[in-house]
Image 1: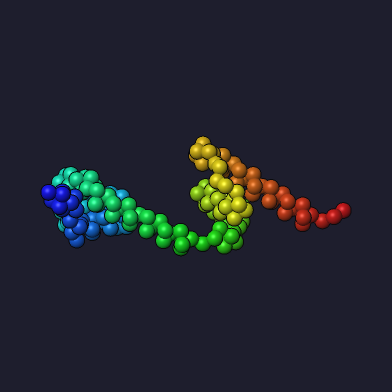
Image 2: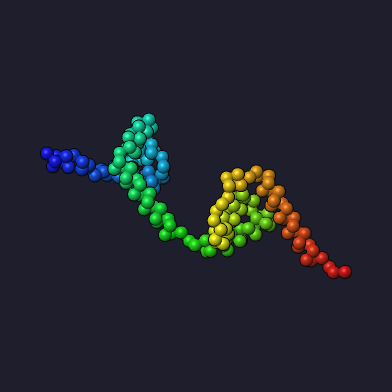
Length: 162
């Protein structure tokens, strides 16, 4: 009788489409979108039926387990593929110079440069959410002030001495 219980606890392995769904859900062109991943894996055309079938698949512990395993593998690969922050400092400095010259006007680029330089210097990221969501006008004013200061510093350096 105990042999029958043991047999019932062993679940069959995932079939090829279920495995494909997991891969599509983690790494595919619709990663994170269960409905689209299901449609891609099962060649389904109905969004509503794909959505309910995908939800059912996600509740399957075997599917959830494979998705967790694939995510873990992907994260491990990303970590090994990462470049040290120090290697990015030169590029960040060049971008900052472009921002100061007014050749680049991107808050995203400015924040990315700050992040690279902070990480390269060993500073832990401690920014608050409100700091990341500053008003664009403040950024433009800061860039204009930096550009003005650069012009002023440059004109003093080239002014003839009397």
